[in-house]
Length: 268
Image (cartoon, one colour):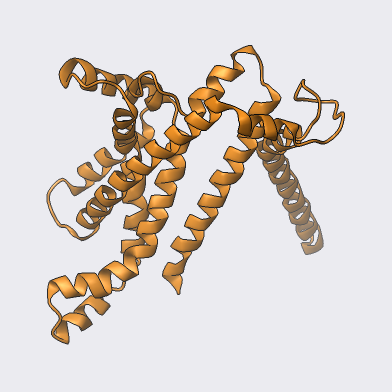
């Protein structure tokens, strides 16, 4: 077999691999594209055929009082969870990256456990803790605490990523110039780590809006947007759900893109 045959075979395999990669991405993203497309479909079926394009389902969605209430609840829970999980995750990241202690690897593994345990199991466990043990009434606040449990590890990982790329010689230079440890932290460490903290907050906020399993067991009589969607699709997917899903997806992607842009500033 000559060199030309080997190169030709490699070229064919390369095109084959690329073709399969394109098909995989189409399989992943085609449902999302169809969701957005159907949200503009005038038909009440919410699927093919496309009978015309209209914003009627978005108008109905914005006029729905239940959607407005669920949206406010989602924002409240996400805001509270973000305000708690981000500082806690930041402190945890500093401890894991800069601390030296026994069983550090074990503690790191335990921190990420909520990320791999199914949300339904965590929700049931939190329900047992909140009601029979602490005798708390389920509300938006208990749901926010549940989100803190499962979202804090994400904040830890994002901030820790920033810290691992941190040039500590800048802190040493500030200390050599006479800055106290507090001034070094406020004027050197915190500004350089802040992009990671902001990115962590944005990611936590976005993931909180999407939580269902933990929310279902810890929110009581209230409801959030994922719970509203779940309740509405029992009788089939309605066009308004397509519109809500499209808005939900676009908003989440925008927040994640902003988080990626903020986190990318570490290279500047």
